[in-house]
Image (cartoon, rainbow, N blue to C red; front, top):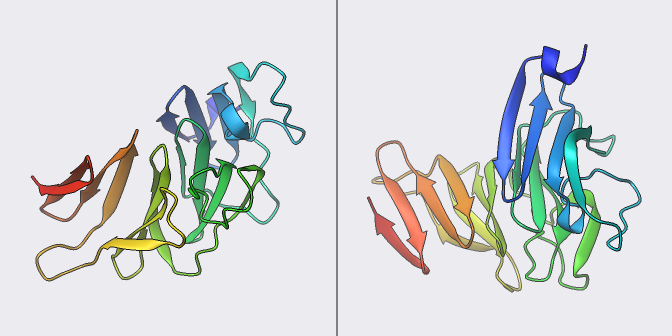
Length: 186
């Protein structure tokens, strides 16, 4: 069957879109900045990086289930079996790896051993909701992951969405937004 004949999930990001099929194949199109779409095993930044048709992404063999895929302008994160994998620009440490490299062209695990429920990305960071319902951020030139919100009796984070340099954290009955680094209840 072709991808359009299968049950799919659709994901949109800045300048790109992705389709995840029921058999966990990922097809992407759009701007492939820093190989965030994983469209080539041999990424060449000197070649125009727009892909106008959906093409199959190259996922590592150890990823056989894609729970979530999320994109910023220059990096992507995949949640698979409660582990985070990242690819693309690492200038701010947003891949969750050491800052010794500004770019990763392959999808690799983040240096984050905790159980992860949800992953989201902003332009300069990656955010996760952990198994114990904490929101942890890597990126923004932080030397290591930073817990930015812990679960409390009043608020238990269950989802996070990143857009540009802002994020929204959702609980069961409360929404928190981060605009200009201030957490605000809605």
